[in-house]
Image 1 (tube, rainbow, N blue to C red):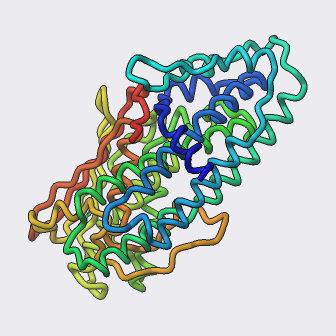
Image 2 (image 1 turned 90 degrees about the horizontal axis):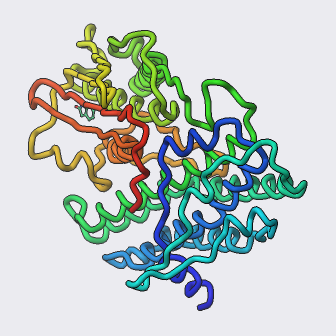
Image 3 (image 1 turned 60 degrees about the horizontal axis):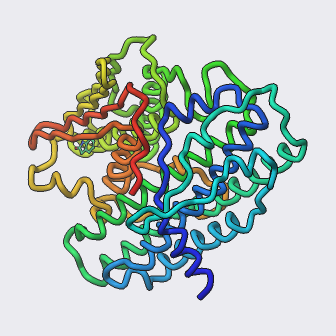
Length: 397
Ligand code: W6P
């Protein structure tokens, strides 16, 4: 039908990645004119990214594309795509200048205008049409609604994967499905980052340590301590413990770098929950002593690395690859929040659900990585590498 043809056309455009540095340089003291350029960029880029996902959702193996849950997610993507391409263009001289017509290269690939057309701050003194502000506000409202619409995506896709597992009785995830999910969730992280950043720049009052949702001085010890407190609380609640295993944090108080604090919190919280769970399950909830979990933070030139070590008995070497799959979960099924407004970052004491593969994607999104090394019979070390060189480009599947 017509909509799908349009989506296929947009999916031919290459996606344009934005570096953390670009996000920060662009978002520092944004003017209405600068925000207008960002609006123009997202008004072009978001439909392209969504279209890529719709096409991929339509072509999944194992009849996944026909599953009710996957179709529901596909419909959200198509709906959001439609709203974005139907959002009116504003034909100001500045907008026309920023939007050179696309060209087609020798291989028939569509070449979009270069990103610096959009990502160059506008001189605060430049004359900006009065309508721009209202236009920006309307666009922010649109993408906020889109972001909210897609909140239940992870839970809904997970439902489809569970059904697939039940139907095929797959012992562990198929590489093709694993690959799709890694790409799909990585793309989702990028889309939600761009929307979250744009909305925050538009709405939040300027602060000298924040550019949108990026904190230029993310204090590692502070975020780590919050993640520790939250994970211990959840652990105590889940196992009805008087006191969760202790977590010792070794981190300079003043160590800071440019990052998205909510991402860092999310990754550490996931790792800590896994470690606490392993320790409590190994020693039993009634044990009168638990070996502490240790968090060591190291500052290198390239990376800040955070090691989370537990003595929870470790994982067999043969079980290690399963840790990163989306089908492998030892935790009992839990009701997922489906209500609009529920946040991305909320999860009770799960096992190796989606926490680890998603945390690794969050790490990789800004050029980092997450690795696990385990000693079966003793414990596990998780290494969270975070890139300090903020010019890593978004990885775009
Ligand atoms: C375990 C299993 C695991 C996964 C991720 C992080 C820490 C741990 N500890 O036993």
